[in-house]
Length: 119
Image (cartoon, rainbow, N blue to C red; front, side, top):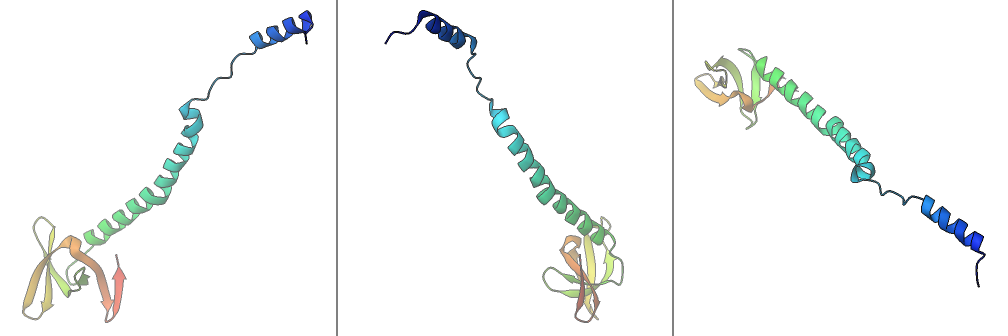
């Protein structure tokens, strides 16, 4: 089972020429999928959340006197005033009853009996 010397020499020459295959780096293997996942997270989670937050801020900033509102706790009232720093709202809940609540606790504006306009 001897090989021809020329064939053996040729095989050794080919083995020396063939460079060992480089192993791909971690970035080559995981970089693109991770960048795709980050992009999807931004598009599916962060952007809608920012849009919702912006809409809520606009809703609260556009509150005005005599708006009929409902709070997160379920209290119905009419806006009668705002605090100097703008963080609190005074609501009239009855003819002689006024309460102060945080502006952020206003859930929605009530259009008419039984109808609510969500924030």
